[in-house]
Image 1 (spheres, rainbow, N blue to C red):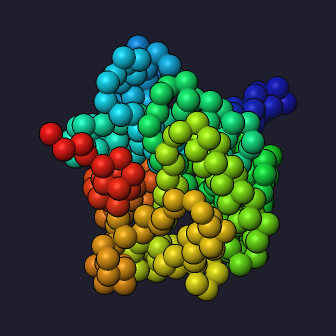
Image 2: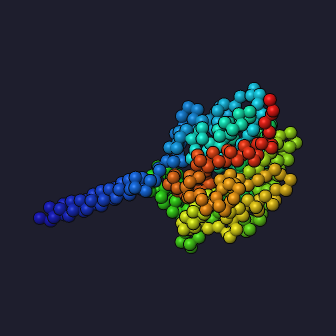
Image 3: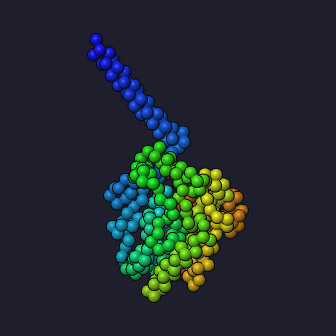
Length: 349
């Protein structure tokens, strides 16, 4: 008589196990749907589908030419002066579709020039090889002028990573699935915002320039080296130091502070830019903060809302680096007026 009782017990265990599994599955699906629909979490925002000659993102397409750059084909016989824009994913246009990036804005504002986009996600100029390649590329492509769009992430010691605190192994493994699940993206976002100690787990050295003298000095030295190397080849150079969203908007400053992101006093509105510009004596360099705020920086900061000019949380994670289409439009207008008008002035007919 014991055998049926044992089978009955086993069935109860299996039913309980099945119920638990189904509960976990339904709960996971519910949370996933809730984050996607109710919270507006955009899964895969930064993940692209590789197609013939372009990369397709949720926010739009970005072309890739035969040379591997995010632009239309470069014509070797182009008679107009050629201006190359170098930098990381901001130049590349992450969060902005082709046609709305600042390089396409410049195509309309300065059609007398051939504007070439050399943006590459992850490019940070903190390795000598990268700067050497940039100089060689400028010569080989016959550029007249180079504009290096300096992201604050570029303020690093030679060869260093952007963050002083590494993600633990389990979180690094989870990062491989970023963009495929709203739950995973949410976990990564919260990790970036805070840690058990109450400090930003991904501590950004560029937010603390007074404590990063070596990084500022080495970054300035790399930029000076690129500028002088291009000058020897007869190529003009301008370094444009980009802001982050909390510098552009008081509303964004409050929002990121509430999320646990930390920066030193004086970083807002332009502490890091001032520190780097002070080391760039003799280099044509300027801050792009006024591209977003206008000449009256504080009035602009009070007017601009969180997410108004930057991607911010549209991709399901904190993103204070990447301007959105409206931000790119303002950046293009700023470059036309404050950089190109004097560096490569229009030729009178």
